[in-house]
Length: 546
Ligand code: NOJ
Image 1 (cartoon, rainbow, N blue to C red):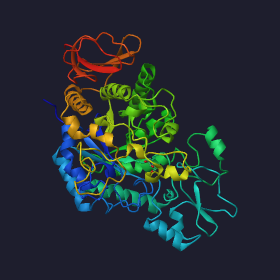
Image 2 (cartoon, protein in one colour):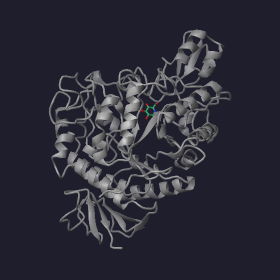
Image 3 (cartoon, rainbow, N blue to C red):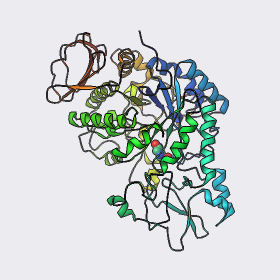
Image 4 (cartoon, rainbow, N blue to C red):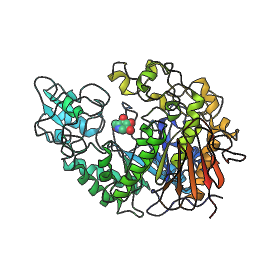
């Protein structure tokens, strides 16, 4: 029934990409940590789900100071989770199953265990080795008062009067992108993985990389006030970062098909097309739906704006509701609008109590909305199960550096990184083998209800809904156009080429169905059989007669 998967150079333009956070997906060797062999073994799940590609979060050697985004060696596999041979086997198996692979590249920083950083520390002040990172001398405290992403200062002293810059944890020293070694080494890394068959790259914090710390530097307060002129900020979203990406594009285009790339660029919306341009990375994440409330006006505005932005870059937009950095969307939608997620996590998910049924209803409605949009949909592992956030992880098990660096005032991202439940019973719900070690983050007993095995046995499960939605999408997908249609208050209706109509009811009362044959419903039976009206907080896809 389903149409062919996207192929050719443009495969990514409307692909459904499934994010695998490798240490929490599937554990083949039973050490409690997910691994590459586990991913290979679970490819049938991805095929049954119907995605086009996998985006693999970092799998490189790492001390896991930041969940693998502290990379010791960009051209190897973390021995804790596999080998290069297992990586090659995984690529071969993914490709044999018709799936593409996008890997995460972390170019802003290395880990503090990287051989070049160790050499920089050993070689001492003024040495060529230190030139590859961003070192500054300061006799009296950090060179600036900037705050790092996970809390605390961005500068770490090394004991000889010098400090190095780290926009994230101290274990993640920033590279000096003015240094030719750094540029050459990253291009070597891109070729290394492209030569091994990788189809594309997700570029971590693509807006940082280049820096200019020569001028008078703004204070943290000035940065927060937004008074630094665009494009010439000392470290953020500088115009010259695009020289790096133009050079990478030449590398990508040496392959057939050209390798794709998607920027994680957290920049003002109007700056996003620079990252998505065809001479640069080609596509950029937009997290606007993820940040929106479940609200018709916000959803429609986000779509209109992002379709315009993507068009202006000659790219397609990206749609995201969850990822490894965010509270899962079933939980976000289960909380009253305006709830502070940081405070909610600190209360172990008790203040306020989540309305899980409402969260799931809205999550499914939003997913059907997202999957009907032109562009690429990025799904995060476990969302196909409707998995909520694990909000009550105790402080002692938390791994996110945010927890320690915020002195226990911000829990961080572990609650969306708890290993997946595959079976309804067993010591790690099938994440690892029966006799394996417990999962590296504790899974709550209620994970049993969300296990793949449990949901496969239930025709009304979230998994059944995702499978139906992805199969339908493949049948219905055509051109990249979208037209909003007139709709009642609180309902958003749009049409895609070929008479594919998507209607989302954001209100809590039922409204009439759009005319045509219902081919997908986010509530009840995914086929929409027997549906006579569009229930509150739900989405339908309707096929209009030609
Ligand atoms: C963005 C990644 O998504 C996040 O997980 C990571 O902590 C930072 N970049 C630093 O690499």
